[in-house]
Amino acid sequence: MTPWLMAALAMGAAGSAHCLGMCGPIALAVPSYAPTPRARWFSTLLLNGGRLVTYVLLGAAVGVLGLGMRLAGLQQAVTIAAGGLLLLSVLVPGALRRWSPQSAITTGLGRLRARLARHLGRNAPEAIFMSGLLNGLLPCGLLYTALLGAATMGSTAESMLFMALFGLGTWPTLVALRMTGGSIGQVMRARLRRVAPALIAVVALLLILRGMELGIPYLSPMPAASMASGAACH
Image 1 (cartoon, helix red, strand yellow):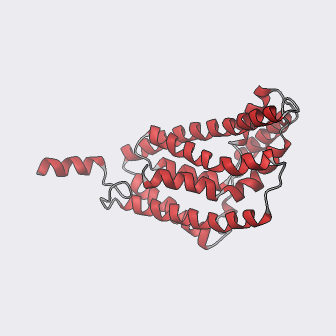
Image 2: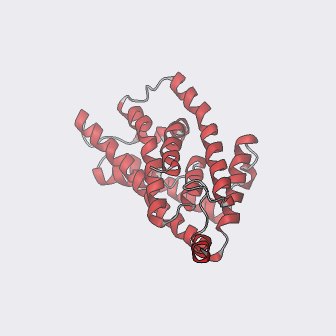
């Protein structure tokens, strides 16, 4: 597994404290389709599976976007800029909040929340899965960080794998939260909150390093065109 894919898994796990605040109430609000431990487990897998599917589809979308940036010769500048913004968000918390989406985007998010609220009251398996799908679309700074990392992967398939590993990294905490009825200790939550900014800073530095194209395998590879021209010269 490459350092980038390991970073995706670790970022999901370390960012679980953020997930507890954003997705935790949804995980606790979604009912099981039957009052048995087996149904509780299955509904938990359906809920988190739906969210994982959304993350993978978002990974495919940013993978295509990343391919377009590479073809346009913009990926290097965009990758460095994205890393710089992420690093700024860690060093100066709240510095980017004033650039929150407005107008049509805000309206769309309001409709998304309303649709999610309708599904939260239903306990049919398909409704639980749909709640997970919609949950994956809710605004989340940690998710945006993961998508920035996924957009710099070498292919759409790698971008999808990056997001899948990120999503799986969040599973242990959210599954435990739902199965225990929300009794995850405050000490564990505090530890996760302390680790999350450090992981985001690491991803930011990796983005900057990748954008610099220093020829370091996996971390900062050279563009394929440059490698091909270099091989032709030899």
